[in-house]
Structures are given as structure tokens and as C-alpha cells.
Image (cartoon, rainbow, N blue to C red):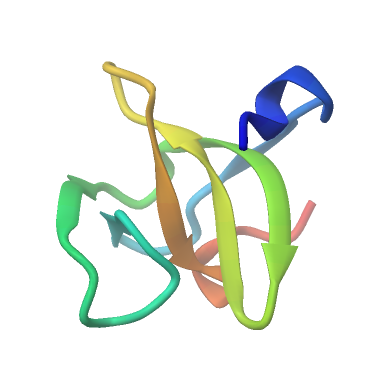
Length: 71
């Protein structure tokens, strides 16, 4: 599924440092470590996980929803 073709991303930032993961669970592969304040383009937020893209390489992955700064 390529949701980025259907959803307009919402610009967010990380409130805390986070690990960008390949799936919505703690056992998923860590794709990147992100610093607090890093931009995160949110595509979906469900069941405690935010899905979107981040980092210089704009990797797609998941972070815990509570790690995003309030909009």
C-alpha cells in the first residue's frame, strides 16, 4: 500500500528522541535514530503508532505516537 499517494502528510516534529521502526511494534527493525526536534511527516496515527517519513533520507517508518510534539 502506498498511502503517501492518497494522504496529505501533516508536518510534525518529535518531542523526544525516537527510533524510526519498520513496523508498529517494539520488536520491529530500527531504521534510524531520530533526535528530538526532528521533522516527521505524519501519514497515519493509529493504536499508539505514528506512520510517516523522517530524516535526511526521508525513510518511511513508525514512531510511538506520544513521541510526536503536539501540533
